[in-house]
Length: 30
Length: 170
Image 1 (tube, chains in turn blue, yellow):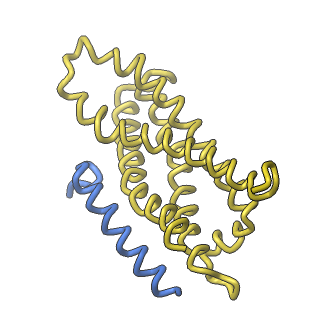
Image 2 (image 1 turned 120 degrees about the vertical axis):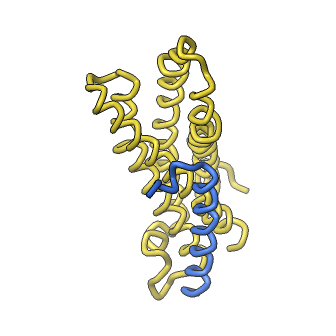
């Protein structure tokens, strides 16, 4: 299977998804 | 505000941190959004302009900007008194949302700094012919450097959110 990081578009989408996950974790902590 | 008091030095290192960070992430995005996608479109006889001149120079400023960013960031966090709380993601009894946010930014930035110095740079040296490597080793090194660079591009998005939200959301 192709690594999604080989695609620039997929890299940006993964970065945005990680941002949402991080915000949810920060909100869960506080 | 008292110039050269504690508050001033905190601001001073933040200024250095932002300048270094702009150069680091600016060059990271240049590699990923401009240089790498453009390489297949450049005629072979013109490729050395990138691989022999532009890329080595960009990589020099890229890796030292990464170093400057992490050093000035750690000094700034220490001067502001939240270094320990941030490194523990604000999970201690004195933890604040600011420490958690800046902590995520610091850890993501630290992973990115590690990738620059221990994955991207050693492998790019092989790709660019700055150290000896067989064609197979060069191909493998190129893939590792690309994936590490793409990992950093991916992490730069939540990292910048964490850094900016720590300052502007509290």
